[in-house]
Image (cartoon, rainbow, N blue to C red; front, side):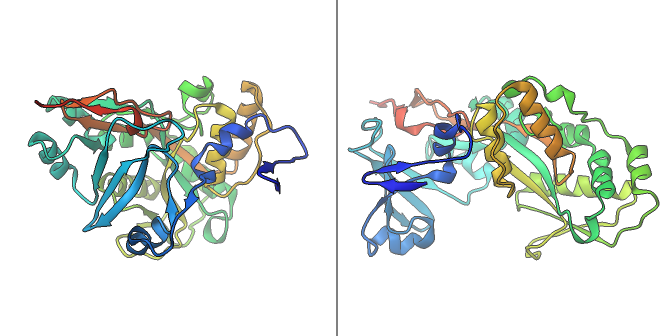
Length: 339
């Protein structure tokens, strides 16, 4: 990649037909530079820095944990309908539902594990297809350098129990990197638990204690504890790292968002997220299947579930749609005047 005047030229040793799709992902976001001493840059530091967004909204202020966005008159998609958006973070789902019910909020996030409850409460819910992949990232060094141990971990996890009990049967059980709706071949990757085979692969080995960590969301912690129980049944000594745990862990429960609904670009972006910088040259279903199969055979990333992303909206919200990765497209939404 190099600059030629006002252009950027990409060169490679092979055709990259999915280059535009990859460049549209979050890994290659481009921002306009703004004044480094602005109040927003000083308040948000490395999160926003001295940058101005080029999308439908721009940052106006950030104070007391609330982010205020205003319409970008020069947006490349045209000016949005909404004049201003206020985003309040660090609120529990219960508090968000309360704000929605009393008119203090028009849009709230609904975790997948609470989707059924949201419907029972008769909330107006907008949900995406399964776009969030729950997967185990397994270190291939130290105590888990033996590939048989990593394969045993993959076979020991009870995906069905995690899906039914913790995530309330939302989404789909997965043993492939891409969901069935994108490729159509995910059924070729077996997702059933085989505890006897896991014990056989472990071969009587008693590896040192293994640390399993994840993010702080309650559902993710519950899933991690369930996975630890599964692995103990297979003969592993697993401890779940709690709050304030060290950064290094032998196994990490991740939530990875599928950033593209195009198989080739989606697969490459997922691999890049876990540190595998291998360009995906294949484009046919058979070729993509081979790429997935060969990578998953290392058992350094073990897919578990694909979950949807969902939001509840007030009765004032009109024309809200979700992007292919489940993000709300606020630039095209509007609010009905109550008067």
